[in-house]
Image (cartoon, rainbow, N blue to C red; front, side):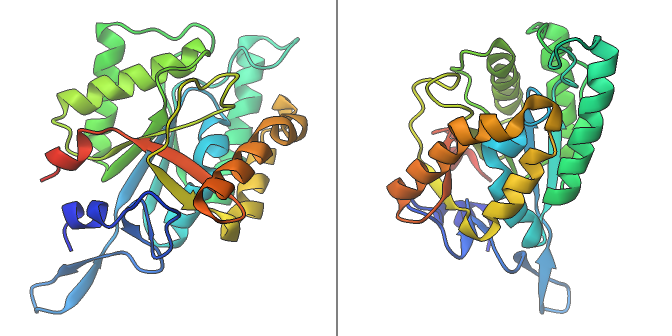
Length: 254
């Protein structure tokens, strides 16, 4: 099974045997030199503007991919420097880095922190290059990031940088957008794919709750639980995460 075939397996309903084309329960198969079927571990990058964005946006999908034997890499554009009232940037960053590390232990993801600053993220030639080089170096099979139409500037910046990198790297992997606090932050989001996260829902919540400094319980109850239930209704399951696949991805895979 090649990557094009795996992506074609995805539909517009909740997925069972696959998660966005990647098999769940066994990794992708390739033929070894001896003619026998071998297992190939695939890699997903989840890129978010702040600590907690990847977990709230697609933490369930991250858990499912990790449990299936795939590598999940959580990339944080910033360290959340401006995210704790009464704390200096360095104090807040130290706290939120630890929270992110704890969350990644729950999801099974490897973490990377980039060099931008919370509340002062930038789009310029240097930052485009930085994102492109990181993604090129990691060489993922698929990437998740923020929907670029977002009321939070850092989210919009993150999505824009990833989109530019994807284009300049030849659209060689599928690019999926996730949602965060839709209506308040993510705007005009129309999913193309849904993932049933019922099996890992408690683990996703555990990962999100690692971000204690963000008042996550109140935030989660107010926004993310509703989103999970609504996306579950759309895809006929108790809880789901929704994604928008960039339309060019299906026609440019090798």
